[in-house]
Length: 141
Image 1 (cartoon, rainbow, N blue to C red):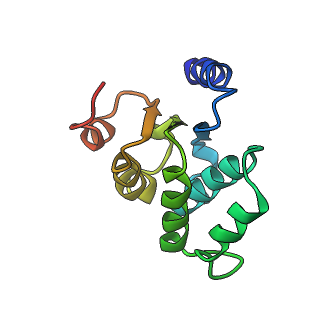
Image 2 (image 1 turned 60 degrees about the vertical axis):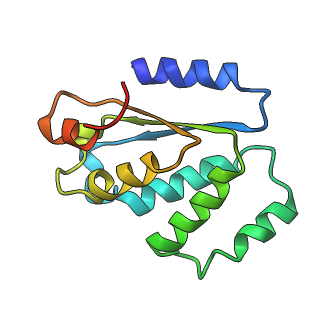
């Protein structure tokens, strides 16, 4: 609930800012098998591309990073970096991270990948779990 309020506030605050974006991702324990880092990045890319700020030339430029209809993780990650670099600031809210499997690549690959981008601000909600705390041990609060 709190993440929905924050995401709504961010959307209102930055609605007229072409160089800021808000992405919302929801973890669901019923969909643990389908939810992985690749799908989360693909969903993030879709949310970015659904904005009104993209021109056909922008999309054509992005097509050079694709290699087929179902892109491998590495291609999506490269595309995501290109998209994120276009913005001054991107807010990513990941709700209920504790509902992913502990061995999920969302936890071990996606979180460090996202933390490595300097213009990306990450909001993660979770129940208190030592494994999740360990992922963010060096992150600011």
